[in-house]
Length: 519
Image 1: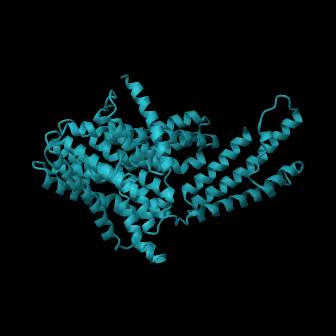
Image 2: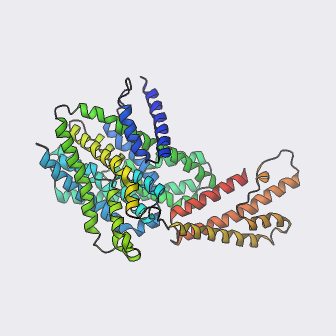
Image 3: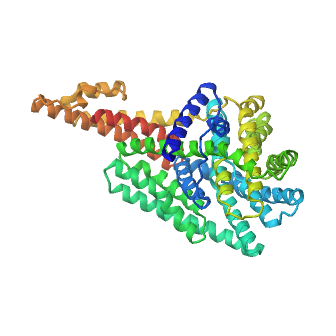
């Protein structure tokens, strides 16, 4: 079968499965994995193979960059303590525990490949978990912590993964050297990402062509990731930090048309990449099992249960222990609602779903790597158990802990909307003496800043010069008012009174209003 036809077929399958998932209320990554399992049994459908060394490069940079772009930087910094404990401490703890279990249970498995397995299954994928949280409703702080963890733990896991692979291939491992390398890789990747993100923002500031800006933005993740990776630094942190910087400056360097265009384009890119990754994950299982025919089903099930159980248990143990430290999530919630404090720990512990990063890292293992097929199988098992098992039960856990539909964080958005309206009304008052012949329009704007004069936003070849001048002046007045509203909301973000997500929500509405006005 023609590979192009296969890709198109899978794209249609992804679209159908996501729509079904939305209708039945299931996180779409879960249904994509299960759909991949079904598609793997379709007669005549060939197996899609991607070169192992291209897996991380193709999928990770844009997914990380897109996620970082949408991450509220203020909330990320405010929760840096809990996020660091999860993205660094928990990852390293999981690596050690999983490596010890694998080394003990798999005869002949050396420590280095065992550590590689631990590094592969240690990073979480917040997509499925946050999909549930957004639908059912959960405290925004828990969502922020999980998103921040999934952004930063990839760097920790992949640096450890690289060290384990090098030690396996090279036959030596020095802890002090690995620790120093971890620090250098992290700082170096961070610096490269910050430079690339700022350079991208300055380039966009000079452009006024949305398709060109989006095209450049699609390249930026690779511009950050590839040089860092080639220099032995953290390409993950480079892509993440570039996305954070680009997202931070987008409110001031992009035009309304560019922001709307970019949001749509990036939504499609992230959707397609995630869709293909999860559906390919399900399609890989039969081939993996075929390569493990020398082991009995009982052995495989036992190893899969042991490693999956270790991954889940390690997360519960770590989160419980660090909850007694100052600044922990449990202590913070206990100040306002002690009854929910322990429930938050259960939810965060149960939300440790694995996904694309683990799959990509496992597939990227070089050919001939010790027990490569077994590591692939165990990785798949961990993803399946956490993504399907925990993912489907997360709504139940949220309801049982009393955390469902308790999100009171809309206060920021309400406040920002109120401030934007106040700024818009103040601008109307300022413009009244400057435009005395346009009082009817100013009256309408004062009554409702969302009232759009659609018939004035279109070009009419037959309009008189007077009518044309009136239309342009109306547009200018409305542009001033929208600009004042946008400036007020950006100022709130810069002061730390609202986060980037609230800014983007309101800014998108203002952008669409301005685009409709300008026709």
